[in-house]
Image (cartoon, rainbow, N blue to C red):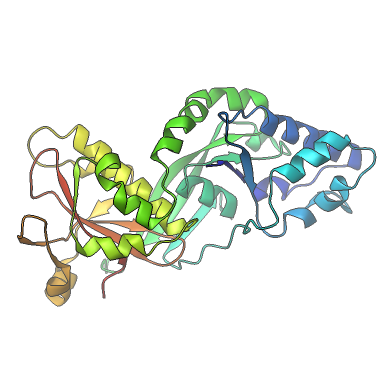
Length: 315
């Protein structure tokens, strides 16, 4: 499992005043990543948009030119190459029209992926705004069931670094990577087989089996599903009595609207392991490769949540 780092392309919207300054920015960028120490057996992996090599560091001086610049330290150039594999897919534009992610009014692809996958965002310190250890994103989603106020606006923080001092502030996140390796799953089949180990507080309906097992290795949706399931698992650990408090979840959980319940009630009922058929109205949203939903029920009471459906939005 790689320690994932995501490049913030917004940090090169303003390029350096000259090539010398550009080289200095890249030196600090490389040193920042070098200061991120993955556990033994793991390696750093840098994810960027497809145009990364053609971004301008200074006027008429692009990343690809820096990579071949004889005046730049050879080891630094080689190190950047080790962070990316030719088979790695570049960060794609956000495919879900129901979500918009921005930082200070600018669309932020790299920061979006850092948020979704709980990765560390890294920037060149090209402007003072990147000299900080976290960045606040504006996330706008569309609630198709809401007629009066269809837009849901929330603000989310992502871990960020543009120098080694910022990296030191994220020691706990890096130190916790070993635990994330233990929790990591290779594909949907692995997730399904390890559900009892990873999520002892969650009960899975059999209908979820095929949905989960169909997800392949490297699936962006798989990673989001794992993250949502851990949110629910952690929520169960603090739920000792009364109703489940949805506000403790990092993600927004909502019930289906009355209009959708009337129209789709039959499709929202699933057979549970105790042979009881239950209505699964509460759900979490997943984005990036289409509108997916994770439907769950708190009907069993304190400490247990039933997972009824994971897949494309039910229509």
